[in-house]
Length: 205
Image 1: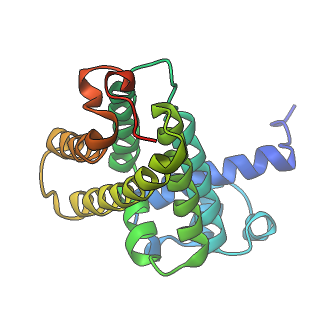
Image 2 (image 1 turned 30 degrees about the vertical axis):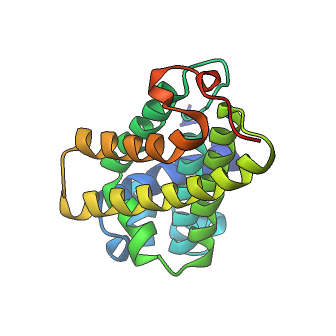
């Protein structure tokens, strides 16, 4: 009996896995669809039946990665927020390190691409919402802190991309700098999250 025929969903998942490896191993401009098809053991026609272009394949790979990072970055109100922030940063840095070329492609080569930037914006927006919910902010203070967290997320994105491209500092220093910047931004509104739960310094409403 020959190998089991994959369902369309299984085949698509396989092609995305092969594509993810290709984008992780080579700069975006060097990845060729015929190479992806060969590595997946399928024809070019079959690959293009699932993904109309290299851009579409990359977008789906990056969207899947963003969804996976969100799954590994929950912010639960009943757990210490500071610890969860560090865990979320570690999850992102783990992915960024393993997929350096893909992250650089999304943030530099495709920096003006609306599809890729929408994926990044959606992930950052969800991370901001989770953080605000986890801290328990409500009322006018939430709106103020929301804008500050949005600015912090931009800072983290730029710092991480520069780190991947230039090796500007150690991973530990980068993580601690990003976390420290957030705790500093939040301190006037919720106190020092490293010292305990937000209830130690109730938000101003």
